[in-house]
Image (cartoon, rainbow, N blue to C red):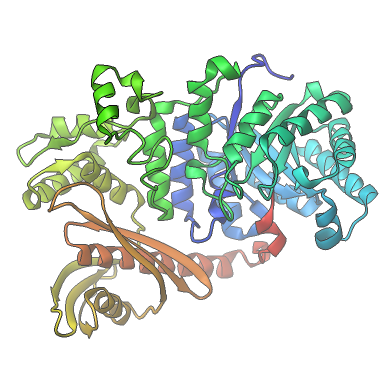
Length: 532
């Protein structure tokens, strides 16, 4: 194995590529950069920053991350053709440690229905792709898409060919989440028996969760010799998602004596990183989510509580502090000082500049005037809103709501625009949320289709803050927004306005591309967003 430590498992994070392909999870360039920096702090070994050929926006995001994020390897995905690979290299070439990741489908069903290619053509294209990539970059990964449904003999032929061509990492994807642990382990054992020189490359695994076995299959692959796991924060991704980074990292740490391997993940950064991705994508973390869910360390059963009082190990195989989750409930109040606030923010896993901290402290004091008690969730909501709020031309200055069960609801609001305009709007509708949406539509001149709206509490108590999450559709594209307030209607207004600002930002970016980069813009190919 080409590594100084044969027991080190690399963590390859593809949240920004495969994770973003989850419906409604698209991120802006600024959001991708923020996630990439959080991943670097988390200690991931490889960040797959995107698919540069897919669009101009994807290319720019990969290029920005390659230039600005140091520490992890920065990878870009490409199909096995020169245009894809060269576009990816141009985006990656300024990275401290670049990697080109090329892929080609190999299963019979993909050969027949997607590619219409014979086996010898597949091998020829795979070899050409790896060689083109190796001429540009020393670190080249190859993935045979739908490997778990590929005939073992042919899969070994393809892997042998790309190893001979110079691939440094060979990834075995379970693209549609079809395999099971024992079968997958046998697949890796087969390749190790039949591919010459396979010990000189790093074997990787990339599993989807269609049958709920992505983590189990990835761990089975590690037992069989894989030394890289491809995964995403919160397990987001196409269809049912990907192998969950936080779950597989804690499984390897908690059962290190069984697996005999380790990672470089700073596990105390898991919870804040998962929360950040949740806020940016607008996908809430389920209460019963392993490792970082609200119930992961909760004990309601009397027998469990009794055991916990005697010793935590009776019912906890890991400590909440191990993943960056605090046990503290009531934390601060209106009389708390700046220093106490700074320390609590730091304990929750957030690093803020002085200017950011000062602004958040003022917002904290304002919130403390509204709420009797403040909890960790309240502070997290303040920080997340500051970090992930979509910057844009519109902001909410004031909102008034009148509503009764007997009639319609009326909303009066004032919006401010960066150009100095202040627009007041009064609108009535069947309900207060509907009235807010129609008022903002009328004020901004942007009209969207609401697809989903939900509200949940970010802390506890009768005066808890409510977080509004909504999904809309505009010009065939899905957008998500979130807002937090002690008034859930105001939270809905903030969430909807965040969506409007995202749409405005998309328009502005498209306008700049039309004006200055027409020769470099690309139309997304459907095959580009269904890879690996």
